[in-house]
Length: 75
Image (cartoon, rainbow, N blue to C red; front, side, top):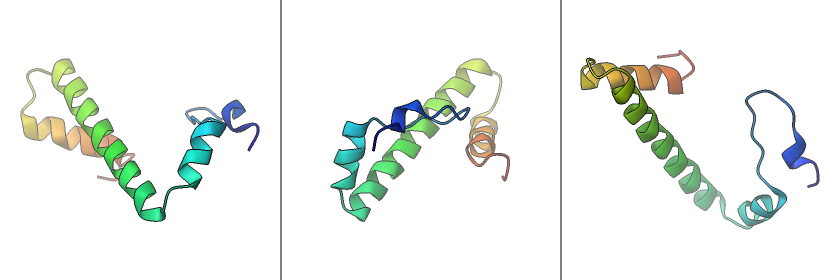
């Protein structure tokens, strides 16, 4: 698993070897739960950021922009 942290592709963050070992020991369901919680956390942080950046926007506008960004523009 060497080299995981040295990936130089733009915008890609790799996990450390230690984290990779821990994740490899998890079941698929456990890894899915972790991913789900990480996505929910990212969504909350983005919503807070957008709300701070655009205090004049309605909550629905903030949520729509968050959805657009998290879906890479597919929404």
